[in-house]
Structure formats: structure tokens, C-alpha cells
Image (cartoon, rainbow, N blue to C red; front, side, top):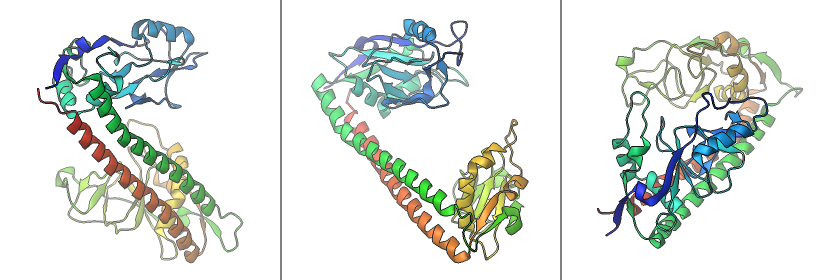
Length: 373
């Protein structure tokens, strides 16, 4: 039998970071340190981006007086998006955490940091954490509740054995993610190169509106949609709003989202319903819709740059119509499409492998971490 203990009995401390308030200012002059929030916690790693806020050296000292970050600590998001984690694997020189990100310091002789992270993502701990959250609409788990949660505590050697098994899965997952990232870079390089047809013989430069029709979709009543089906409905996102009984556009049609996720370019391989926040691009027989799709993907950043900022971001279909595209022969269009489709298929195959491996990992993690009380 595995012993169960309160988390508070297995750790040295549970602390949190600090919000600015009157203590410091975000992104002030001389701010060269990352201000880590839930967004930057990525299971094992802390992953700041160019959108991560920054603070100066004095703020780092002020925050660390409260958080007291050290190598081996486990970070846990206790507010908002509850349950994201990271492991501090090297001295935190140029970053610290906001309030609501907890610092958990395991007692190393009885609780392995990596084992704790795996536990925090297991079904059994997720359920216990959810039972102890408070607040509406913003949920949080108070630190006083967090330390009362009971966790299974096998021997350190057994914890290390379990972590070792799961590490084989995470290494495979990381490898697949790296392969996908590299393949995407290759795809984008060849896509941009193949579609740069300036000065090529027999190639015309046209605006999209000169060669294709820009058609706005038709509103559909949400109550008429189904949760499952074969005819997806696209409205303000590339994620289907639902499914409908009929379509208004055929498969192999390129469309652009014009509200919400405005500027996103989509291509449907099945018949679909375009709602009124979609602009569909109807191509003549001399132009491949798939070719237009790839061309617009290159220009997606230009479309997004012209989105009108409002409570609901919007993109005019006139902006889409004014996008310039190179028009080679239909045969050349198809040659380019075939090459790029092979890249996409390769990426999708890797993504399918990744999804399968992640499901295997979750299965074995929950199986290994389910202990009878």
C-alpha cells in the first residue's frame, strides 16, 4: 500500500509571486527580465515569448522576496487557468513570477519534483484540485486548500522509476515536436520560394478581385446547428461553429474569416456552410482555389495588419480583393500545389503520430499514478 499524505506535509513551503500594484511597473525603461504568468508555463519548461511582459532588476528583487525561487521548485498556476506547471531547472536569473503562480518546494528526501509535476497532471490530482477551487467567474485554488490536498507518496526510488518510464514518452514527444517545427520551417521556405514568381515568363500579376469573386457567406441561426455532422459551419473562426443540414459552398474552396479571428485563411476539403462573417473566394476554372489558399497564407500577416480594431475585430472583403497574386498557367499552379500538399501531408502525419504518443503518455501516466488508498 502507498501512503497518502497532505501536500503541506511533503513540501518545505508554498509561496506565490507578486502583482505590480504599487510595487513596480511592467515594461518600464531598463526592463530586461521576464515577468512570468500562466501563459509561459509549459508543463516542464518556462517559455517566455516576445509578448511576455518585462520588469527591471529592482522588481525582480521585490518579487523574489515573496516567491523565493530556487532550482528544483515546481511552479503551478493556481488562478485562472489552473493546473499549468513548470520545473525550475536552472537558477532564475532574469525572470520571476506574478501573483497566482505558486512556488512549491518539495522536501527532496520524500518528494521528487518531477514526480510531483506528473502527479499534478494526473486525473486523480486534477479532480482533487477542482474540488478545492473557489470563485466565479475567475477560479482559483487558495494556498490553504492546496496544502490540504492528499497525494500518494511511494518511496523515492519508486517515484524515480515512474518518472523514468514517463520520461521515455516525453522524450519521444519532444522529438516529434522538433521534427514538426523543422518540417514547418522547410514548408514555409519552399512555399515562399515557389510562390515568388515575379519576372517569370508567362506570369501575370493581378489583384484577387480581378480574377476571382469575393462572396460573403449567409447567416445561419445558431439554434439550427448540430454538435456533430458532415457539413461544418464557419463563422468567426477556423474551428467550426457547428454542423448544418446543407452546404452553400462546395469542397475545395478557400475562404477568409472577416470577424473575430479576422484575417485567418481557411480551405475546406468538404462541402461546408459559410456564415456571414466569412468571405469565400470563388475561382474561375483557370485558377486553382488551392493555389489561392497558399498564396493568401503567405499574405496572412498583411490581412491581419488591416483588421479594424473594435470590440469585434473586422476585416473588409475589399482588403482581400486588393491582395495581389501571381497567376501562372493552371499547370504550373497545380505543380506548385502538389509540392506544397506533400509538405502539408508530411506535417499532418507527424502531428497524428504526436497526438497518438500524447494519448499513450496520458494513459500510462494515469495508470502508473493511480494508487489504491
